[in-house]
Length: 416
Picture 1 (tube, rainbow, N blue to C red):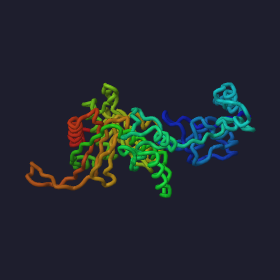
Picture 2 (tube, rainbow, N blue to C red):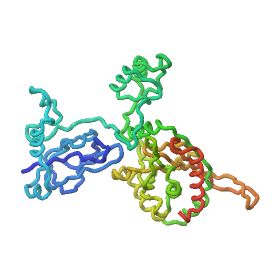
Picture 3 (cartoon, one colour):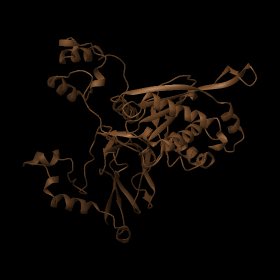
Picture 4 (cartoon, rainbow, N blue to C red):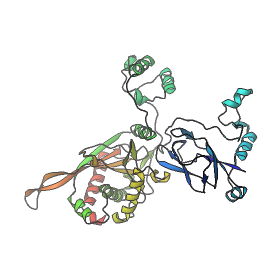
């Protein structure tokens, strides 16, 4: 009977591999089309690998906790000829024939050891790929940035850092003994020896993704402006709503309206041009285990607050479960984050590398505020809104006017 591979799918445009979290099948079991057979984790989400046709599991090559590249065979199904004709799936024999016909997939040179060294060799009983073990990595964000560090790194030092998988930011803790305070290879080796016995944990794919994004963001001149925001009208409006919008959704909606009025504020500086956004897709930062995910609310300027609640709640729930589809985190122009949920009263959030702006909301605090109407101090709930921006695109004055407009919009939440 034909044998059909279960392959590691392409889970996103910048995803090269994924880690097996759970095997939901066992050898001898029968599966049906679209059944989730394996659960995997990328640096962005947890997703399922499904069976594309019905059949019996005759082999499972994948192992839990191991990362595999896109296209790697994870298991094998034995299917009927009718099922193969119905689905048109590729068999192991088709894969083997394609590899034999393409010399570029064969190992170079000759000798018995070359076939064993090849990452795609045939086994004695089936002819499918050996799983390719890879270390998780983080690739690709929309806006390219420079790779150079803040100080000179010699070719010898750079070569050693490449061998160790280190970047310029990773050696910032090392005191240099070279000319002008330059960190030498000897400084690096001494530091690595010094911390060799320190306790450590393996960074998760999510943590590596956040680190990569923040490192890229910090290559730009970022600045933050802030202003107080009286929250009472927002809180009163929220109490009257069912379902209740999250506080960050009020900010998201106000930010979208303000940006639609002045699109250049969220533009990208590409060469000598400021490229304006063509849609006002705003992300919301969601805290998850060991990192942050940013699902995107599409066209937030064209939908009312009440119309956005269901989409917002659904995306936040999917993010917390690490079940976001790949396209739900792509191509936002700005982000809103509510760091006040942690009791923080001040912060300087950092925008993603492909975004110019991020708007943060602090915790609300009861304060006495002077009222010109009553001529007395009155108690209000006051929070701080912080706007971090790319200073190449926006100046402090422009950022301040945007923040003032957001505050003005939030004082009339019923109009959002």
